Image (tube, rainbow, N blue to C red; front, side):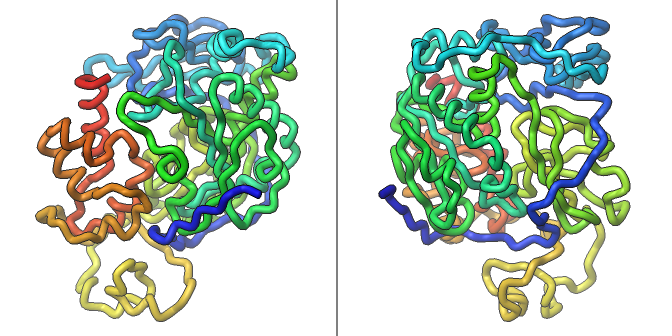
Length: 447
């Protein structure tokens, strides 16, 4: 029987706009984009040119430092744009789909007969290696390194997150095949929600299963790593998502890398929240068409805590399986703090809404204040179920004290792990940005 770890600290943000476990039909997108900004630590080098015809699986660009790491087109069609920003930094590589879905065949394999090097080579050639993230630093994984372990979280506790028990339905065999592949690379651990009855997760073979119970961020893979096998300085682990494991399993058993992605479209400003079937990097135009309730909204690729703001004609993030739409919140609320706040969510019982029970809230992006002095109050510790001192860690990062950063556990956290800390921070400090600056500094100075 697998172990159950009960996490007492955390916070569930009850947002309105959760989707039922139903699918909606959406017309396929016309354009798809791979965004280098989705890959931390990447310096992209284009290998395809505007006007080139590509198949799904053909390389668009590579990692300049590791050219064997290929970033491939999710659809067949024509490369129509390489959008750049300041200093000619590549922002988006856009492919217009031809509707034929011509896919590269990488050849099916007997997983058990392959060596570790053969598996990594196949993952690199197909572009599936980019599904992995390397910790510490949450960067594109270096295929030349050895990894202590691989972690997969099979549930997500972020606001309005998709239900992976529902998403995995029909792909149980491919999920197990994907785990077989992962186990050839390094010992594999999966985190399962204690209440889940899904047989694909609870009955997974060749891996170590740990069950978790508790509030968000118990579904974050970093929290699970910290409670199962903490990362020490000099150690490296890989993380990967459930749908990416399925795609890898399907590629090894069929030879075709499936770029399909099941995405939940949710939020208080979505008229009909639902799950949809789309493709990695899809343009959101058809996904959101006639389904937004108002004009003044924020569209987020991902969840509201860690996702990326985009537009209604923007693109789905490479690792995202959620599109959230909430009110923009750029209006001024007269005497907002003086009102009883029955419709306001608060973690500290600031408003009388705590008397209303498990109510769902329609929250906007208004910060209700400005940046203040960053004092040690202990409020961050209440929502971070890890054995670290977050406030002291952030102060060490701001001081660029590398030795102190290491002592305080920077190697164990990434942005999603401390997103709740930023949400509850009364000082309005951009903690995720500060942490990313610290991780980038560590990657340069320590490696």
